[in-house]
Length: 95
Image (cartoon, rainbow, N blue to C red; front, side):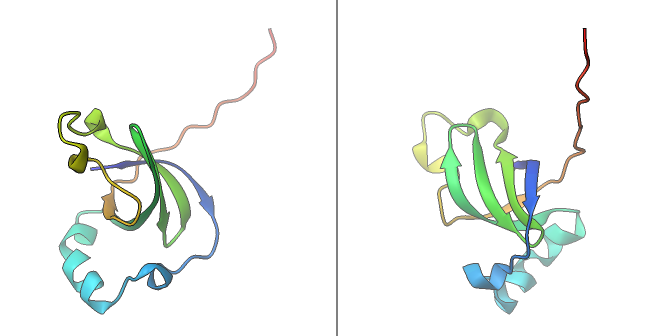
């Protein structure tokens, strides 16, 4: 399951990407466990960019999917359930 790495807050509606009442109903058990719905808009090795209700996020794909099965990694257009993780901000330090 992809994990959230960063996001750019912008007003997005998942309905613009095909989310409807049937999707919401099917996703309800996942949302109840703290996952958030997302639509993959760009896929790369080990990570992807996805649209969420909070904006565009970069998500890490744990285990980088099964290298022997190219269909195991998310592709552009796939729906995903993302697990939010704590974000860390680094302060610049002068040496």
